Image (cartoon, rainbow, N blue to C red; front, side, top):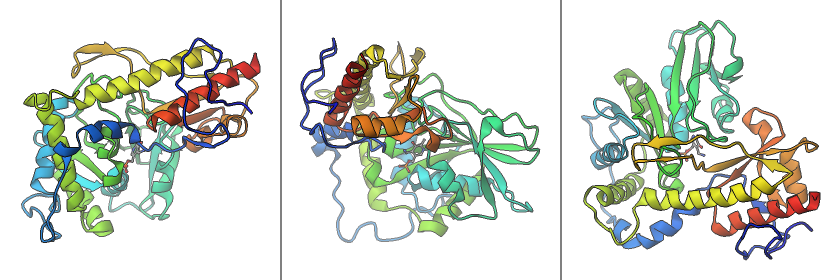
Amino acid sequence: VVATNSFPSSSVTIPPTNISPNAILPLERGDPIVFGEYWKKMSETCTVVIKGWELMSYLSDMNNVCWYMLPETKEAIKRLHHVVGNAVTEDRYIVVGNGATQLLQGAVFALTPSEASKPINVVVAAPYYSEYQDEVDILRSGLYQWAGDAALYEKNEPYIEVVTSPNNPDGTMRGPVVKSEAEGKLIHDLAYYWPHYTPITHQADHDIMIFTFSKCTGHAGSRIGWAIVKDIEVAKKMTRYVQMSSIGVSKESQTRVAKIMGVICDGYQNFESMESELFFEYSKRILKKRWEKLWEVIDESKVFSVAKYPKAFCNFTNESSESFPGFIWLKCEEGIEDCGSYLLEKLKIRARGGERFGVSPKYARISMIGTDDEFHEFLNRVSNAKKECD
Ligand code: PMP
């Protein structure tokens, strides 16, 4: 038995948890429940009441390219980006989707040339978000196909490159990497470009930028994502894709998003609810605290290592800071070839292994955005793994 709920004999203080040492720790998913405590405190302010007769129509605003998007959703999204300063929205089209997941597929569809004789290649630099490959391959489409690691792409054929920045799983800031001379189009997945995860160094201004409510506020269950798009034809095709797969996006969810984004912005712009901490300050503080504890444990570990993040000046918080990503990208040291199996067999921690992200099984991804108990139990077990090797 490796894990105990007592304090390990290192310099790091880890609170005891209610999790049994024999229980499997489920840290393979990125379920963002860490922010739940904040929303519990804000519960009255964020409550949305929807009457039985409201929001019944499929339609919202027929003057907008994205006709199923509620005007208040659009306004809330633009206001939030304006407050945070992480993306340009002026003179851009906004397309709402059922999570970033639907919009990624909609964007690939929209960028596929209609006259192409064979499927266009979709590439992402490894390590890449583990779901992209299945999202692209699931329908075995004649329009597009998965072509793997963007850094290895050498075909002289048109391609679509997805740029994830900050990246899932490793939290690094990224740009396009394909070197081929062929015609390429870009989709930027900016799910984690928010000030609690990383310094906001610039206003992003790419052709297609995808964001999600899931990772911004933690409301993954609302299934709301949005894309900021420069080209009206691309925005129309993305809207068409959402229409064909779900005839729009739940208006109950859109209403909730608009409300919660409004509460966040009111805090920053009107100094409302000043008795409680503002959302990004709170969430950054929590993530920072977790990362600091993690560093202490990892620095003492002979089994695992994690790359350090450079500091950068954040225009939103007006301070220089490291990144505090939503995942730990763990590397197992010499002698352990399969990090995921080691974690599961020795420490009863379920992680997602490196191969799912297109790299070596020496790596594994661990969620940093689960409950406090899960996180502390994780630290306990990793810290005890070190003792085993001493
Ligand atoms: N892109 C990235 C990089 C992600 O990490 C995730 C969620 N883990 C998604 C997209 C999907 O987000 P959503 O819940 O909005 O579908």
